[in-house]
Image 1 (cartoon, rainbow, N blue to C red):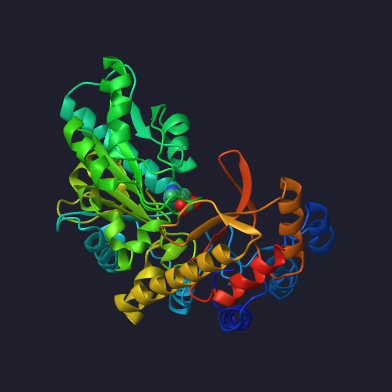
Image 2 (cartoon, rainbow, N blue to C red):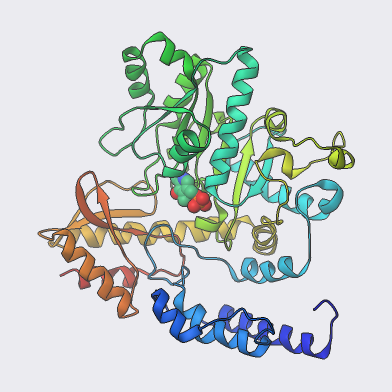
Amino acid sequence: MHTFTEASAAMARTLADLCLDRLAMQAPLDNTLTPQQLAEQAGATVTRDGIGAQRAAQLWEDVLAPACLSVDHPRYLSFIPGAPTKAAAAFDMLVGASSVYGGSWLEGSGAVYAENQALRWIADLVGLPAESGGVFVQGGTIGNLSALVAARAAIQHRRGERPARWAVVVTGETHSSVKHALETVMDVDIVLVPGDERGRLTGDAIRHRLTELDAVTRDSIFAVVATAGTTNLGVVDDIAGIADVATEQGWWLHVDGAYGGAGLAAPSVRPLYAGIERADSFIVDPHKWLFAPYDCCALLYRDPVLARAAHTQKAGYLDPVTVEGEWNPSDFSIQLTRRARGLPFWFSLAVHGTDAYTAAIEQTLHVTRAGRQLIDEAEHLRLLVEPDLSVLIFERIGWTPPDYARWSSALLDSGHAFVTPTRHGDQVCTRFAIVNPQTSIDDLATIIDSLR
Ligand SMILES: *Cc1c(COP(=O)(O)O)cnc(C)c1O
């Protein structure tokens, strides 16, 4: 298994060819299979003697891969799609072949150096100071959790005591991963502040909510989470107003830009993020709107020393790793061993330069604005929320939930598009999330037509 033979060469070539094919063509949208269908078509794949490279690769190509939706399809507009650049996707193969340990400087200095340059570009977009820094983690979920754990430790250290309960301010549109991190993982309470008519969390609403709370609850708050681009609505919170309250109250300001943080690189929407430079921590998922393959989240701290104090793992065998002055990515999140998952993103940034990223993000915003126009002009549709970024949420006038469900399944079954129903308040509706520069105005037009 570990020696390179002619058979391994043939196998590697087969897989390299499959990679090349996948990079060269637009894969079909594909569809989901049931467990029974997969059992019939793929059968038992793990056996005592092995089924051999040829057969396993063939199974992937013929049965398993077509049972995975292609998130980079230009008419995949559900949830938040992905759209890796060819450079990022191709470099991901090399990362896989390279056995790089990305957790420490001692073991992965070259990788960590490159990743840190990519992180620096993001920190500059946010406006974080020179000493800021962080780590690429698996996704926004781990990024949010790691930031909030650092926040709690930092505020507890500053106050020198811990209240009976800790709490964090969020709003209804705050991502489920934040609420899950707080309530389920960290056992922290949530202080829910109502959003405005577009679901935005504002400084004024937080101030008002504070007047309703008793002193014990007020004192239990250590952080507020602002969202730079809500997932369902694509709306940016009042970050400057929230930052003012955070400063007044001595709270940590965490900004969740998992989806929308990419818009920082687009001059046409950059003013929406005013105040973001005051964040104590920030995340953005390059696997969403920054064109990296899964999975990749950039986690940044204004003061990494505070994060290190919370996250550094101590064990005798780790002593050689904890050298003063060396940047150990594992010190900044809840994970130790780490794939150097920022490298595909770094490679693509290095190859193309940051202007190409700005242009690609502006392209998706341009298509979104044109799509908004199409919705405005269609008398069978009604836009539900004024968009900030690249999400359009709208209703088909007169439709009930089963109508949306039927339409959505038919679109996917025909291989044309993947657009799922969603909810806004109590209303079932649908939405487009556009992060793929290859999504065209025409793509949106054909889907809008299918809603007649
Ligand atoms: C997607 C998303 C997350 C979760 O990120 P994962 O990479 O899926 O773990 C968190 N917050 C927001 C705003 C998101 O859009």
